[in-house]
Image 1 (cartoon, rainbow, N blue to C red):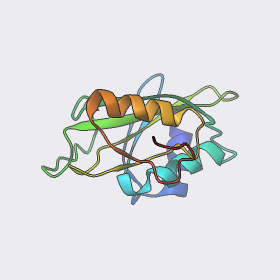
Image 2: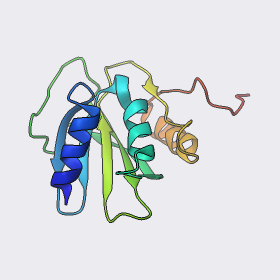
Image 3: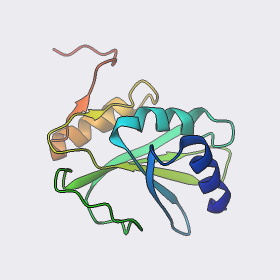
Image 4: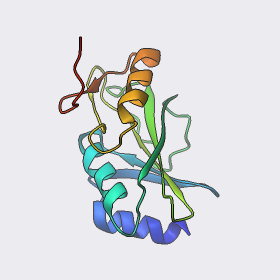
Length: 142
């Protein structure tokens, strides 16, 4: 099932956006360039062939936890990865989009795309000290 999804994502997003991918029996993981996280999330949510309209969770894991085939190591990257689990309500699969931002950088927010993203991003920010770029969020900070 993930072979056709992999071909679709490779053809539509390309290798500048998708740095690596990993298939497990129940899920498909794609490692995204931090610069393109919003474009990739937009595509996965809105493309009629993917329809991943539900953001199930955002979690942070220690870098290297997932066995990426290309094992992209870089001393200038943060020691953790952020995982965005996206699901379809109609199709029988999920895609987990991951990114590993450069040290000290802001992570682009996907709050404009998914209603629950601000709370999940805020939770990650409080627990792990990961800062999200909240430009474009409509809530006010006090």
